[in-house]
Image (cartoon, rainbow, N blue to C red; front, side, top):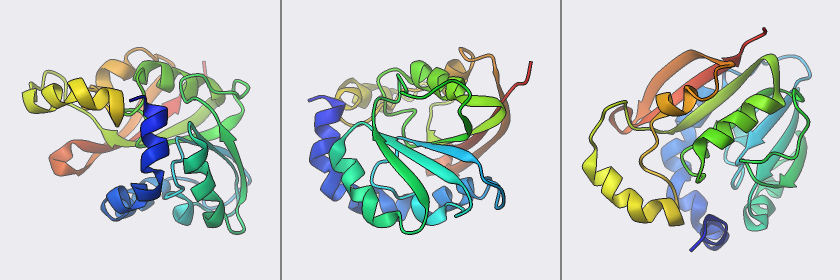
Length: 200
């Protein structure tokens, strides 16, 4: 089963699976967004919109997801936010280079088949001096994690990847600089990360 098909099927149950477990860490990650201004912000892999209650209302947002079923569940959460929804692929974003001040990648980088392509695209659409906020599960460099790696043989084709080493992905996007990396859940398996795009 493809990721598109899987997430179309689980869309009605997605909040039950992840909302409570991730609410506080989503909120903490999104506190890094400026509370004033009028910025362009991409919510990449928006899912059902669980990030929306934690977003400052002063900015302009675009939420992207692969499936229409997920996006349909975002609409009731938009409220008064300046928000547009786009169905698209996180590994090939339909946006101009340097368009966004921030990109938010919550639970998407370790879901897509090609995390490096996803991060490169996020870096491309963020302006120099902009930032990328990441919340996801990553193996540590050199970590054996044989149970996770074995489960990944199935999980990577259906729901999520369990074998992504963030440091290996970041090494392929040299224009990004690591600014913060904080363990947040499951003994540090889940991490909250901030990357800044260098101004060369």
